[in-house]
Image (cartoon, rainbow, N blue to C red; front, side, top):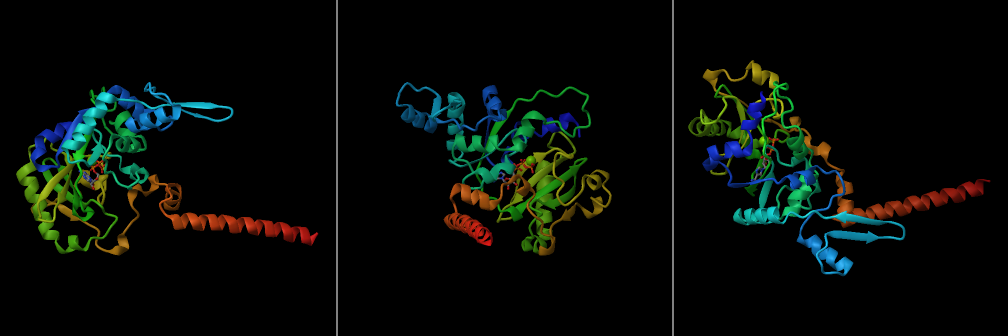
Length: 341
Ligand SMILES: Nc1ncnc2c1ncn2[C@@H]1O[C@H](COP(=O)(O)OP(=O)(O)OP(=O)(O)O)[C@@H](O)[C@H]1O
Ligand SMILES: [Mg+2]
């Protein structure tokens, strides 16, 4: 995989080619100050008019100053809420044009590792502040911005020029059991993997032939030879009517998760893709092989999240009770200890 291949898999490169077969989307150039804001590790302050209104109220002035001030006895912390009025207007217009709910990503990646931080635990966004919160919390987004050419074999060659872009896609309720990742080598579809391989979906086992044929037809008619490279990975979705859609296009190499295959076997073709037999189709066949979700390690413990958001009131009550009983226990111990003397 070369830098050029990664460059070709940017959303703005493949979307115009396959527009008719994928989810409606809007691409907006990312201004440098927004990129700097995404990469700034400082205090998370989400910009937006809501903040400005709040701050006006706190400060009691109406001159639209951007500083929010919290004072205590000794220190005064000033946090500047960044403001990108022109970009904000573009994003809001795009969200409206896409029906009010969007799935956001950058040139290559979505902030899949950050969905736990969103109030709805999903990547669905209705406002710019929701998008900013996800992007600022995501390592995948940082990787797109800072090391897009990691794993490329031509590390010594200069990096291609990249213009960063915010991609907003119309929100679509995709059923995870309908998603498949397809590996294309020398313009041939050599392997297909269930995308959400951590789960067992009985319908895939039952309908494996029709799924395989639907994906093969889609590939042969719509994708093959139409892309800039002959090795790539495409993600597809088979909807409830059996129609296949393109979801994403990824480089053929380690940056892309090989799911139920290994990159070694995909590259060598060992056992994979004997052409007479068609692509090798792998899916999870029983509950026994079900694995934990790969993004779990990016999350904080569920209990902690519930407590901090107050989402589960009973958990909070239990937590307080536990705390109280621990305190009582330790004071009992003090009494016991005192009596022993
Ligand atoms: N428009 C959409 N609406 C709702 N959910 C979506 C949408 N697009 C994608 N998804 C969901 O989000 C997942 C990730 O999307 P996508 O493949 O674009 O992200 P990615 O960062 O490129 O992922 P990867 O790193 O695996 O290539 C998809 O598998 C799908 O379940
Ligand atoms: Mg992708």
